[in-house]
Length: 327
Image 1 (tube, rainbow, N blue to C red):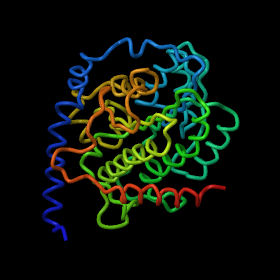
Image 2: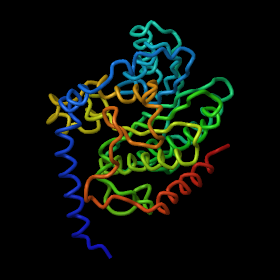
Image 3: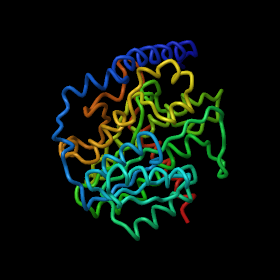
């Protein structure tokens, strides 16, 4: 048995190492240092005729990515929960890009039935080349949806799982299909806990629940890459960016770090690079990226690795839960 004191010590170690890493790499300064080695030509591409879904696209990194893709001719499908904010986002993207091929779809990613319905309807009416799973949720209290699902898990993990698996057949019909999942470097402080996916045991910590969901997304990406060779999968960390989501969900962190935070465009840069560049598609599938480079999914000596059996159990549990909501 692992003693509680050992768990606390390991958690403190992970958090400390992660914070030091973040201050160096995840800030605006970290981005500027990494960007010195970027190739501008990577993003000098025309993606006319290619279709992109971006979830959580009405603000922040999702909206910034939508602008950059639309500027390069892509057909962009904004998947948002709030109609007014979605319309505002579409207006902004069209104005910035001069591209009218920007479409709004209203979907609550925490409602698995609605996610299934959207994916089914979309597949019948549209083609799809790139799926960007960007929608995220971080609620600080343990809150249940109308389906009795913990809200962070429902949005970040189950919603992402259903949307991706439902759209894989459509993606496979396209040339050079890709799936990018916006995870977080916060996942480095978490080891997958497949025994408590909805945080029913112990005290609830919204930040750690979010980090656990982000670990789950990285493992899902690795598993999908192994199962579906025809599609290029990747997950990524946008760094610490100045977005409405960070301000609302982590106000203390935001206040302390405000002057060091990346812009939304800097946070979105690797999303766009993974979605449109030829260089990204030549990388192996299933990797985790930060500032256009594949990076480790574990901190050194952090004991955060799980067995293949545990990773597979995550996928089995998600599949079992997902099919319950499929009509």
